[in-house]
Length: 181
Picture (tube, rainbow, N blue to C red):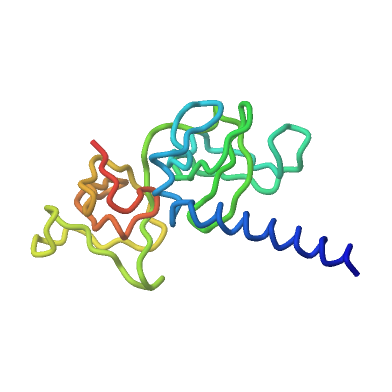
């Protein structure tokens, strides 16, 4: 019985240590952004980038021997780098799917997609970063555009046939309170 008690104590001690480590971690990925850097690139992880090519294979693991899970077919889509290994980057898309891509298929160009509160909602794009400004367009969920500038609450957002200002919280591809020049 004494061996079981010692074993249980060891398990409890391990759990307590794991809980202490988790308690010291920042509450969200963006808070870690200022602290964590990629072991290969030296750049922040996580961070947003975009797809450079129209055909990007996403693999189960970080090498060519790994199965292709799916293929992106739209250059410019924003993705979040969540890990690095050698020349591979683990990415997550705006729908939460993740996998590994080769680093040269990614661009530092910042883009975003519109994410309304309700899928059927049209998100207003304003003439100026002011909710009282004229609405220049109403954008559907998933509309892709380039981030020209972000103040931390508003982003200048442009794409095919539109250019204006949108509330930063309505975009996936930029962190809350992040500023982009």
